[in-house]
Length: 490
Image (cartoon, rainbow, N blue to C red; front, side, top):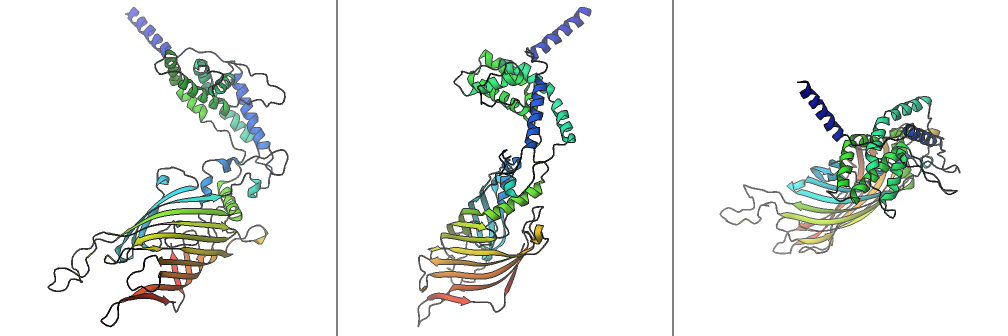
């Protein structure tokens, strides 16, 4: 019985030894050297001057360069004019109901200034409109906090932050030793001329398996921080896997060691040092970026494909005369009504917005009408008239508050839309199918709530039916409302 128990203990010990690869110990002080280098690097980041005009250098704002910040430049601006059927419009204006989505955003994909949109809308008369479009927005990126108006030398790296960083760094010692003693010694050395050779040497130097080389005068030495060490080891592992064929004994051993410390390496890769701009709130940064983009201008270009279909109708047909088998007009069965494409361009600067676009479409108003081509040019100009709300420094009202939200404000503008026939219908005199010029003032409470006072001048091509005395005739009929119209948008 004793021999059985002893044999079992020996078997378990052998299996455990087989699971833990051989180690090559690193110098006892190596992690503390990496820890000190990391601490000094963070301390230097906090101490650097942020003023663009200072010869000591510029700290490019880390928050500005992070992946999540560029989307702030896509924030809806208060000076945009709502445009019917414009490719840049992200609403379903003119629709009784509808939805607009950015498909890639639904899956968590950040496309930056490139936006793909899709929409489905129910229009007057039962029509259905389906669109898909692409919008590109370009805005000048600030290179530093000084450019955004933050005039200070940097955030304080106080004793509390220092103690917190030292405590956090100490928790990584075990992960660092495991990776350096188990994985790094098994990394194959790439040829000197390959791109993986530098990462291989950096990984070995970071772990203390190799001494740092002597550098010629004037050349800056690398700083082996914890983040840099983890990145170097990961790159060296990637190059090692690429250099060894699958099934090779060395590749098998490398994978065995990598698997044994995969969790530790992942923890090292996730280490993120504190940011020297951590005293700036995200809301304040968002507000500053929006103000910066408004001051320096933004441009937007969009293209859109559009498809409209008639509704499907059944039952009684009033155009079927009593005793007749064929109606004068058939009921629609979901046939296509219109297809089109358009492009729009917009520029905004200091409260002004100018937009122009043109589209081409082929379609018909009624199922029995001829299918004809037409152009749909649009143009608009608008300006922020006044801001109603809290005042900023110097008593000046700010359109964007410090928390990044818009203040109530008035916007005045002129909107022009038209539809010009490339192919005239029977009896049509003027090539103008539709035209509208609207002079308006918007009171915008928030980004999503506004009231519009506008005076529209409308021109519509109307038809006079044919008689025995005269043929069919189509010409433009103009109208102006007696009272100013009010539109509330949500």
